[in-house]
Image (cartoon, rainbow, N blue to C red):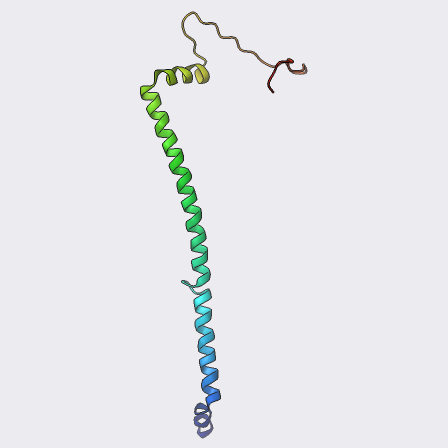
Length: 111
């Protein structure tokens, strides 16, 4: 028992205890639940979420503009009716040109 008391009184013992406690605190600061690495990964996630939010806001604005155009712009409605539904005005004839497999494209084509 006396040797334990003598060991506790030595500066070397207290140096080792303080070193171990310091290493424990540093380990917790780096690898703990709220440590440096966790904060770094959370910052990365936050940055990705902000970028995703920005893209979604842009998409949302574009959709609202399209909704407004569909409600209030007759020219846009006509464009959609022609391009997506294949509709025509009375008296118009629609010609649909299709590529023939095996034939080269016409010389004036843009493709």
